[in-house]
Image (cartoon, rainbow, N blue to C red):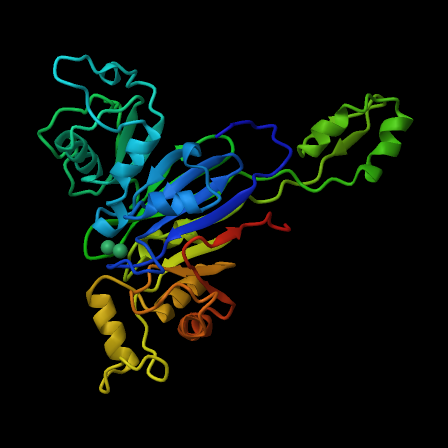
Length: 390
Ligand SMILES: [Zn+2]
Ligand SMILES: [Zn+2]
């Protein structure tokens, strides 16, 4: 990320949903993954099977991927990681017996891809690369978000570092129950918190630094002209600074606007530990694996009630649309997008009226709790996240 305290134009922020299915992929949805575009840079959140093909069908440029955030090590969120790394880091094939493989002499202190995830992410990547005899042209690094009961050190595997793995992967520990600023530059920062699922799982909060305020030049120009002060002071005013004119008059730039906050959760039946970080999110992305749709889904069991479906969904570590809507309301999110749907709910609702009926009903269930419009993600859907007004 280009870091500059003097940026005068906001980032272009866009999300592309690459995969939106839960346990089993279908012909219309592949496993979990989404791309966050921050102007020219791309960060991925989860990388399930099918991510790479979806990337090729999408507007996202694979070569721009710098960081990959894994929410948890369930296969439907990580099975696509190694093939994607092999493509980005040029890792196809091995060398013939006796021939030198130059890819084994790379600068591991200059990783091209940074991966973040819970304990096991590093070991999973290392083992997969080791047993598939995969070598890379460029390096990667894995930082792990460790829970209080996780080992304090070590890599969770007896295998030594892969030839392309930076040994500088951090083990990051919580402070006050969260992982704050696991990444930060002058433009953007990322924090994380544990969210409850059937296995250790992480939710991420991406926070943009405050933006320059909207400037009205006609408010300043007469004074600047009158005092014969160089026009270059406009640049500083634009950044919200106060400037002194030639006659001692002080002009104040417009107040800075708050930056955007995006909350991207993994699988969960209770994300409350991320609440303090997630308050007032501009966008919440929350799973809604199962829904009770008695008048729409002919597969609904006769004796099922919403309570029974919620209980069953919770017991598997997942959420219903109502649970997602209630959480969005609790954190006062401005926008809610649901993802991670059961294979029962087809993802071609833009062209298939039956799928549309299902997805509209699911959105409606979340909307009743949230009190605002809710969007159900489908694969290859793009969403722009505009600059806040104030
Ligand atoms: Zn999942
Ligand atoms: Zn899971």
